[in-house]
Length: 77
Image (tube, rainbow, N blue to C red; front, side, top):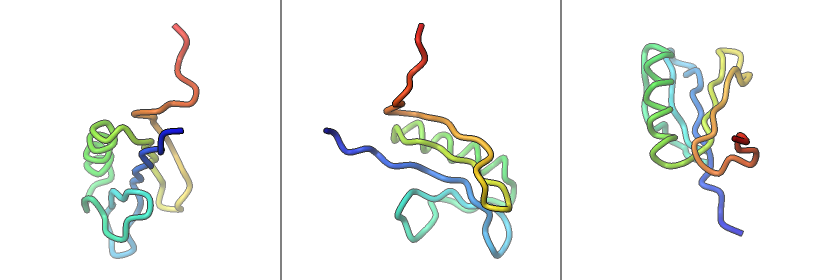
């Protein structure tokens, strides 16, 4: 079974702003003042690497997610 490529998350930074982080990474892939800028950059990274993409609110809860790779439930069509 192929290894899953992981996921990227947009999360609130304790010092202010927003970070794009990959699962298991200690450092962020990018830091942004505006959430929308982090979402746009994170989505691009996620699409390029074929990962799941999660957008979190300030409370840490997942608000939205996208699949850019191995979607276990692809749309029928």
